[in-house]
Length: 99
Image (cartoon, rainbow, N blue to C red; front, side, top):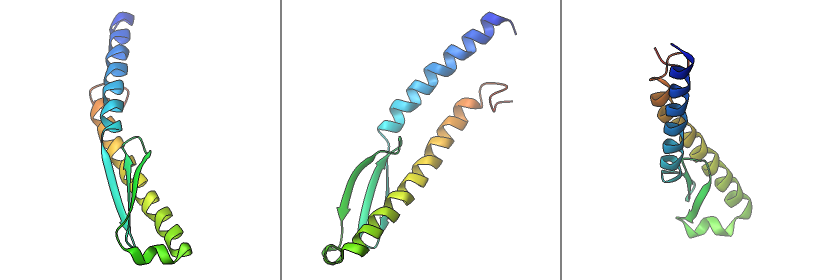
């Protein structure tokens, strides 16, 4: 493949990556631990925290631990979602995870 073909492939890859980035920003992933529900975007930014059980609010240490665990769990899920989406893009580009 010539230089112009490679440049075209890189342009397509860049365009597809931008599309996926927008899609991930609109994707919401949630995780729940001990009555705390955390929602993050596909870009791993926290969107919301909900307390499903009021009793958790009475124990600051348990609340803090639940928020951290739920957040980490949601981020790991979002990483898997992002990896799957990027894998689909890279599959079409030889030398970048493709055939």
